View (spheres, rainbow, N blue to C red):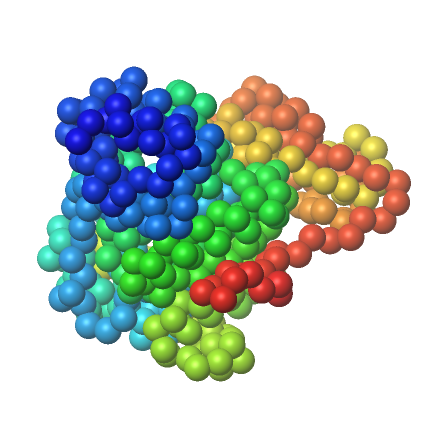
Length: 441
């Protein structure tokens, strides 16, 4: 078999066989196929596309290129969730304890943040003492005993995807639905859960800016998951504004605690409740949506979901007293209010700019080796549809010094567009995709 022939076949719009796909994934991962040939094939794929079978095969081959997490020692159907990335996305901190409190095993492998989107691991590590590096035996033991563990991703999880993504990033071959879907799903399949729920963000702060593009990605990922024997659902949620109010690691932990205590942001709860619903439906804990919602609200009301987050913290070395009394963690040195320069209704928010403002404060990292400051970030006061007057505080920046705060505040303010006319509020959840296609909610 020759890479030249595979490139030629795809250039002519032909289907690639399973054997051809396995050949180039293995060959590129182990260094036998050079970058220039792989780049050529990636461009041919972007121009001619992959069908659903080719996409599923590519995903499985990438998943099998490294460690495949064996969760067979964990009792019951395991559930996992994945977000395509957003600003203020702390859903795992809320969804995982809710689902675990209902008896569903959640064996969660999460990543660190890069760029304007925050990573679950960074958020958890803002809790003093919290360990995200677990031996496989400890990971399995914790899930069996308390139904929940959250750990950093293995360095050898889907290495083919890491190599391919690095190449796509510099060859203008990122924006292909099949390649995006296979990249995300290869890691989810390698993580070993039986039920996969995907949170596909759409809007100015998401990778997919339009609802149509988000639907296409959601449908592709659900088809891959189901073809590969996993019960897969995708929920399409809004990222035209910050999810909840907080951006920044410790600030987001505090907001997650509020939701688990039943007093949090209603839009954030709506997203988390929907994701949790599909996880417990997929695992058979609930039979209907109504039953699922009733069960979710019960574990919020009786405190068992919050208790599960505290138990996770204790098990993984964290000090849960910071969850019970967040004020003892302290705050960043500077609290800098950003005020509206005129009155009007909030018409739109460039959410990516909000994320980049938080990045300027030190809440994210531009390079993998950058160090995150867990206490800095942003609390958003004005959201789409709100009426603001000149001088009203639309957000508060938490920074380590005044100079950094002022620079980030300018960017934050520029993300807002106001209107003289009233503006409708945006929906937190647009719809979901299952094996039968897209359903509006």
